[in-house]
Amino acid sequence: SKPVLHEDGDHLSLLNAYSHWKKAGSKQAFARQHGLNATALDRAATIRGQLKDLVQQAWGAKQIASCGGPKNWHVVRRALLKGCFMQTARRDEVNQNAYQTLATRQVAKLHPQGVLFRRRPAPPCVVYAEFVTTTRNYLRTVTEVDPAWLAELCPQYFAASPAAARPSST
Image 1 (cartoon, rainbow, N blue to C red):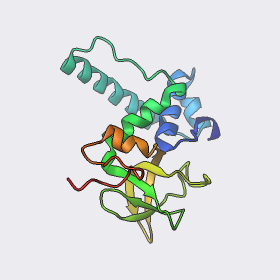
Image 2 (cartoon, rainbow, N blue to C red; image 1 turned 180 degrees about the vertical axis):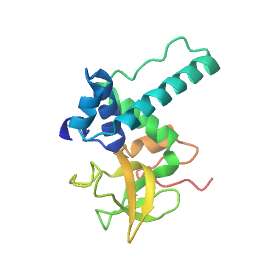
Image 3 (cartoon, rainbow, N blue to C red; image 1 turned 90 degrees about the vertical axis):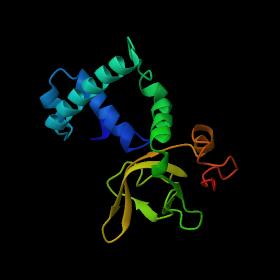
């Protein structure tokens, strides 16, 4: 459903859907209205609570701060890249609607059900959750990231260069 989709990608759309669901008066009705799985959202809330408890116990954190909501979701995108840098892909310079994964150099297209599929121009760099092979290779659950963040956030893996997304040889 359109109100829960986020233009920067699928991860933020999922986070947006979860946030709206958490605030909804009738969670079941909200899920039904937006074509969401209420059981999966309940499970996500349970897992989020468990993760929050683990972080507070393991690191003694009294409180865990939010990124500040939708106006600061670039913070979430940066965190996704930092945690999933091995699952990044760069748009092919010749075939503009294909991507090459940076870790394994496999070629794939954005999955047709993803938020970014119809974006023109396609984002130059993405982080993805799944590499799916059917008759073609697809990147599924994809969010746009700034290519400059690769060298900044993952200098041990990406060389600082104008291309900024070529794995270093170390």
